[in-house]
Length: 151
Image (cartoon, rainbow, N blue to C red; front, side, top):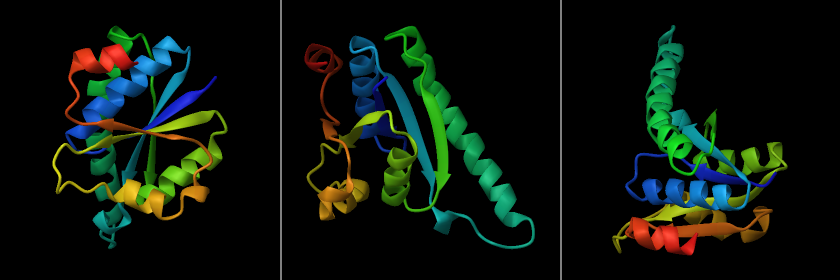
């Protein structure tokens, strides 16, 4: 089964990327893998502190994931998988693709703001040969109706 890999973060454009991936997966009998990366610099090291911070980050990620997963289960009928990794988001995205041979498309949201930067996309485009599958870029300001029409 072909899977769509989406990066879960706190950006507004992440919502459209999730919707796009779920609708495409439903229409093509595919799956959705939602990857969330805990940046290594967010984990302070110290006696027991790092594990507490990791646990808190995981709880926050799982709650955020559940919002998207609930919609995916009810609307397009997709049961997404959550993967949580720690490190640099672009590097961990590439590692996840390497670990899961069924990932066929990476879906990233694009900010509608001209000043908006996507550091993961910037990193991936620095060496596009490192990505073994296509990238789909989903504008963050697309309407639900337009997303439905193009998926």
